[in-house]
Amino acid sequence: MSDTPSYGFDTLQIHAGARPDPATGARQTPIYQSTAFVFRDAEHAAALFNLQEVGFIYSRLTNPTVAVLQERIATLEGGVGAVCCSSGHAAQIMALFPLMQPGCNIIASTRLYGGTVTQFSQTIKRFGWSAKFVDFDDLDAVRDAIDDNTRAIFGEAIANPGGYIMDVRAVADVADAAGLPLIIDNTSATPYLCRPIEHGATLVVHSTTKYLTGNGTVTGGAVVDSGKFDWAASGKFPSMSEPEPAYHGLKFAETFGPLAFTFHGIAIGLRDLGMTMNPQAAHYTLMGIETLSLRMERHVENAVKLAKWLEADPRVDYVTYAGLESSPYFDRVATVCPRGAGALFTFAVKGGYEACVKLVDSLEVFSHVANLGDTRSLIIHSASTTHRQLTAEQQEAAGAAPNVVRVSIGIEDIDDLIADLDQGLAKATS
Ligand SMILES: *Cc1c(COP(=O)(O)O)cnc(C)c1O
Image: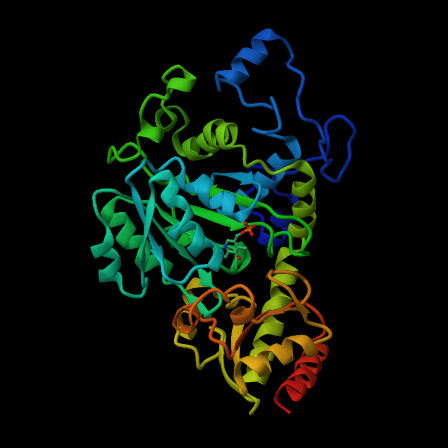
C-alpha cells in the first residue's frame, strides 16, 4: 500500500507501508530479526553497495520491519520518505547532520523539550555547531538571528510544558525567504493533530518513544522529509549537493531528487553514525501506530475535560493548556492543530513546592515518571526532578516553577482521573 494517498488517516495508520509477507503470507508485519540479507549474486551485491538498486544489505542501514515503519510514518506525515533511528534525540542529530559543518548554527525556539535544550545548548558544540534560541512569536527576532552560517530553523508544533502552539506557517515563510529548511519536532502533536509539512516544514522529527508507540515500551525516533527543499540552490548544503567521495562522487540531490535527504540519512547517517532502530522496537511502534487516531482523540478529550476541571478548582492557581479559551494560544489551535491541542499541560498548585511534592506522592492512577505520551496518565514535578539543577529564575523561564506540575493525560476513564486528582489535591493542600 505505497501509492495510496487517497486513503484516510485511520486506514493508512494500519496499512501504509505494509503488505502480506511474500514468503509466508503472514498478515501482520514479521519481525525480521536478521542482521544481514543474502545477495542474489555478486552483481546484485555490487549494485546495492553502489546505491544503484534499493534493497537490504545489513540492519545498521536497512531492515524490512523498520522499512515498513518508515513508510508508515512518512505517509502519515505527508512526506516522501523517512528514516527511523534509535531515539528522538538521535533523530534530531540525524536531521541536522547532513546540513551542518563546524562553524554552522541553527535558530531554535526557546520553547523546546528540556532534553533538546541541553542537546542544542551544550552537546552539539562539540561538533562545532551552535544554536541561537529565539522567541518564535517574534518573527523579526527570528529574521535578525539568521546569519551566513545558519543552516536550519528548529521548533516544536505543540511545545511542552507551557501549552505553546507554534505558528508553523509564519516561521516557514521566514525560513523560505532565507532559503533555509524548517525542522519541526512533531512529537507532542503527532501527525493526527498536526501535519507540519502542510504548514511549510521541510523536515519533521519524532520521538516515536511517545505517542506513536503510545504504550511506553520502546525508545525510537524518525526523520521525515517533505521532499520539497532544493538542496543545491544556495550552495550551503555541500553534503547534499556536491560529489560524495565515499560513493564515487555521487551527488545525492542530483541522483535522488526529492528522496535525496532520505537516501543520505540511510547511506551516510545510519551507515556512519549507527543510531539504528532495531526491528523489535519497530514492531512495538507499528503495533502502537495502528491505533494512533483513536488514542489521540481520547487523549485530547480527557485533557480538555481535566484542564477545565482544574481551572475551576480553587486549589489550583492556573492551568497552561492551549485547549482552554484562557490560553493566549487558543486561537492558533484551529489553524495549526484543528483536532486538538494535545494532552500535555502544566498547572500551578496553591501551596507551592511542598504541596506539589505531596500531590505527586498521593496519586494512585497517575504515575510519577519522566515520560509522556503513554496510554497511562503521568505526572512530574519538574522543580524537584528534571529541572532541580536550575536556579529559581531558570525554572520559572522553563515553565517549571516550584509550584507547577506537568501532566501527560492518558486514555483512562475521565471520572477516575478527576477523582484521583481530587483526592490528591485534598491531601496536598490540607
Ligand atoms: C521525548 C522527546 C524528545 C526526545 O526523544 P527520546 O526518544 O527520549 O530521545 C524530543 N522531543 C520531544 C518533544 C520529546 O517529548
